[in-house]
Length: 252
View 1 (tube, helix red, strand yellow):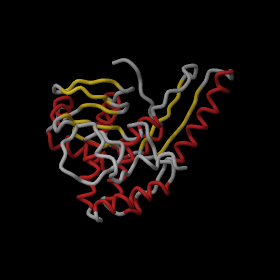
View 2 (tube, rainbow, N blue to C red):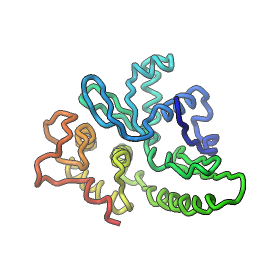
View 3 (cartoon, rainbow, N blue to C red):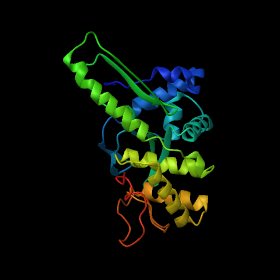
């Protein structure tokens, strides 16, 4: 397999480091993720596999890693609970795994830099740039690196205040928007998203989860009132309905 991924030295402080087998599985997911958007055919459906995504079912990972289905499910659930991945199903049978924040941390830098380790582990960023000597290329890379660090700091949101279950659901939506190369610019815009989602769901967490899954499954850019539609249509609902998620990205 051609190419490479970037790994933070801070991974030694992450809980995955304590389990060599699960650490290997996490690295394998990073290697399997698409580096760039590409058209993919799966089970007679043609769709766009986004950067940071992969098609990987529990059965596939079970065969690949030589482990039982319950073991794979528990591992993926742990990663979801930690906000490291989220899973969705397109066309009711195409299993998609998305690496959260992949686009932010697996960013491409100038190839003149010998080694750049820049990735996310447990919400932390560690940046180290090594060069053989002081050069013009070094000076060009520094502003780019600083700009990326500012963007990274700006994108950290406080989700725990929304309450158990709601924090993970909002995090799932933010990760989905990130995979579409869209993002929220401030905590205030995320707070508005949360309030609107509560209004749409009447404060019912399970209904809110169905609303989020409806939009993700249909590849919609916003959140809409729950209705009886099939996944994978790729079309937005009728205009005039209240839309959440596509109006706040550029507010700040």
